[in-house]
Image 1 (cartoon, one colour):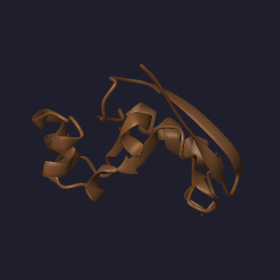
Image 2 (cartoon, rainbow, N blue to C red; image 1 turned 90 degrees about the vertical axis):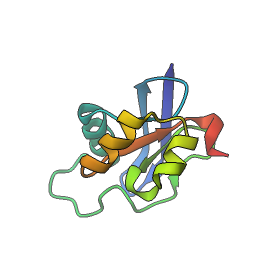
Image 3 (cartoon, rainbow, N blue to C red; image 1 turned 180 degrees about the vertical axis):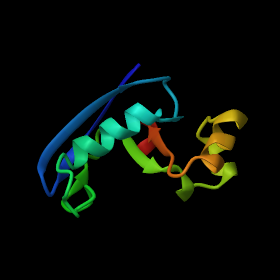
Image 4 (cartoon, rainbow, N blue to C red; image 1 turned 90 degrees about the horizontal axis):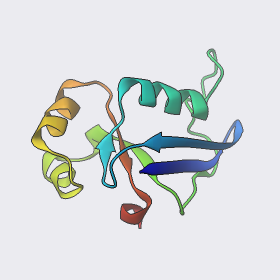
Length: 102
């Protein structure tokens, strides 16, 4: 399934697409790099992709995985192996599909 994450931040409008299951999932290292680069393409910028209106309400969202407890991650559909990866990786990003964002 293709998930579209879009919004508006300090650098303007952004949109990035990810291929993944039709449930919440952890972004791979390359997906996470692509997401961060899409939010802020400038190497020396201090915005960290945070300033602006943020993600659109219609699409999927990307969140920091550490903001969720293990129980919440299980409820989103992550397996034990993915939850263990969240606890071992710093920082891990999770994609929440559009259906689960409301």
